[in-house]
Image 1 (cartoon, rainbow, N blue to C red):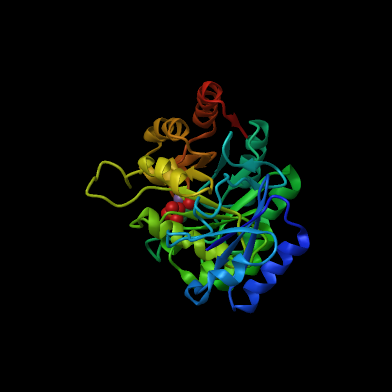
Image 2: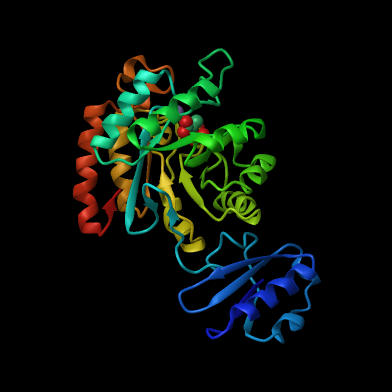
Amino acid sequence: MLVVMHSHATPQQIEQVVAAIRRMGLTPHPLPGPTRTAIGITGNISVIDPRTLEVLPGVLELIRVTKPYKLASREMHEADTYVRLPYTTIGPGTFTIIAGPCAVENEEMILRTAEFLRQQGVNLMRGGAFKPRSSPYTFQGLGQAGLDILARARQRTGIGIVTELMDTENADAVQSVADIIQIGTRNMQNFSLLRRVSHSSKPVLLKRGMAATLEEWLMAAEYVMAGGNYNVVLCERGVRTFSDHSRNTLDLSVIPPAKHLSHLPILVDPSHGTGKRDYVPAMALAALAAGADGLLIEIHPDPDHALSDGAQSLNFESFRCLLSALHRLAEPLGKTIN
Ligand code: PEP
Ligand code: MN
């Protein structure tokens, strides 16, 4: 349910509606717009008698939101969401590059990568300290020591940090270092984890579950937003299909419907989407052409000796070439790389 206020509604009238919604045991979400404020309502809205809100001063109309996801939908929030960070802004009109290694391996490689990215004008670096690995016998990440390395890299270079949170146990540690908290494909429907980050002040990068429909993905975003964290960035990383020529099937065709149904920004991860470094540049350029708002991409100073995902990681030179091709393509598309 969405309460649309008159363009001349006063702050007191908005507050009155918010209070009335709370008295019904529901959660109000004020959504200020350029001309008027709307107030989203989440919770069990079947208990609402719409007339009790319709008659309040300053209320223009009540709109029923038909989609099961509410706050994530364009029905409730028509304008595009921009996720604003100290270093950059993610949203339409820009194309945000988040690059870095799959995992934090040691301080030297992280510092080298951070310095290289800053020279290239990239403002956000990825790197997992906690790694979800298919095998318990492979490198599992450096954990807290990895987070400390990321924190020092930010301090030294000013680069923003994107790193994965795997469990509620490490939420405080990860959110104290991360500028964006990454939720991985395997955790897209880990509802206790989603609820935990819904109370975080840090934006959430929500990867698509490897077998998730668009609706399930948006419902996962809804969990984060329902708790009050509206800064959600979607990330398509490929889904499981019968195809075996690539690690996953990168579903670029999800971008237009995601943009149609939701106001949230969407990034593409061509590294996990293809699994092979030779295929990454083509899919990165295709993501830009398809309307994505940026990339999450794996790079490594020495991919052949990486502790994880080296096969899909670009070296610095290949990344530099890709970046220049992205700049050339972004211009006619009216997008600025940031
Ligand atoms: C990652 O980005 O490092 C990662 C593990 O990705 P995904 O969750 O998409 O597999
Ligand atoms: Mn990886």
